Length: 541
Image (cartoon, rainbow, N blue to C red; front, side):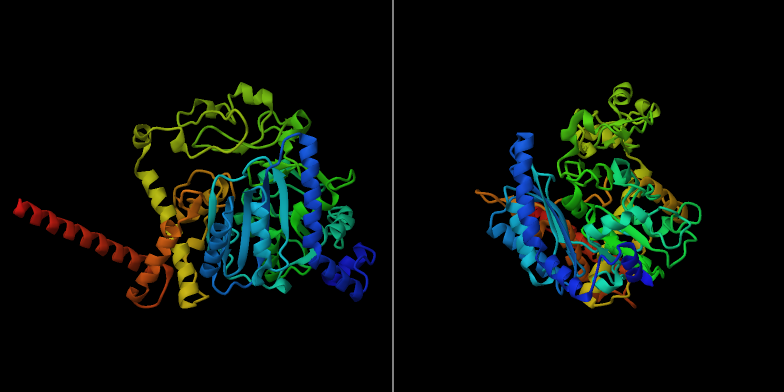
């Protein structure tokens, strides 16, 4: 019975005896070294095939564990990067529940850093993926403490994600490959597993496992709500003991969501260990792999092939995806954003439709006035300020825009206040309104705003909030991180200063209010001092 019984039946004893399990565990512990050797071979092969020197590396890793002091851990990471003069970019987030990183490095700088992290006590045994590339895959470095390693409705701090026993059963790529033929074979058969893609809908459009249905969510944050929705949810009215095989890009979203499902009473929850990336490393070069098309990734490649190369390098051979406009399967990866800023749809489009609509997603958007130029090559837009003028922006600003900005700012303050209360005061039960619904997609925000009567915001391409990069300072030879200028660090410092001034029971809302009062008094004090100084100078003059 349960996951273990299903695994034994589905794989015909693939797990074998307990001794073999120990052997698998030992092999997993040594996998880091083996994977590194395989990655080096793939890097050399990629150079030979493309004829383009891969002088950078794209690196991803995550680990759920217990980190006693996340701030000190971040400082140690910064010191290592500075001391070794490493040129790395990307998103590296830590908190008391672990680390999550998608990054790139020049030469082997990224891998050097990742291997250093893996040797640190909390992160030993961490899986690292390395891919060759010809340039940085990210525009800047964001290394900081973040309240949530993965964005999810109602947050993740209350989930026991650091406890492996509370997460789904991990399947190796080999076990997954053996079992996937039974997934979705007969939906009415209680013994057959449900193949569940927990990524975003637009990721599925680029590629997915055969038999996997398109996710109903457009952002992972919505997963808890949408997957059990009575009308559209794949888990709606499903027996709690039915086996579930879930997968995502690198494994982190599966680990988080499997914890949610187990707390909801689902017994037979299984996850693909290392995600699709690990499956590609094992079966990507084999003809009989179970993956269709390409894999959406959150770096400059935007899509990669099962062999591990950027999908854009395939040219016309990659044009096998469904075009958003004509619905024919002749669109190449990667996605594009609609040049209409007020739309910003992330979509796939064939060359003919792109030329006909000048890069817009529909005829209506071609009439818009708040637009960016069409990108010659697929990629990410810069912030709209890079294409606009201050005068034009000022002319468009109104009360609604200002109010939406204030709502976003308050959500950020409340999330940070919750983190401060949890880490400084030690109150793990605190929950703020910042966790109620802050999904990054238009669809999710529409549902949320119907509940809270807030105006909708512009759609975001990624599944994370848009954030400011770390500020750097020139030091002649290179660059050094300047953490004292980080707006998040300043915000946490202001919140910590305000703790003694909170009246009554502590809450994120009260802490933010106390901080704003202190900030107001501080500004008034500076203004008063300036006026006195000016008056004194005038009297002397």
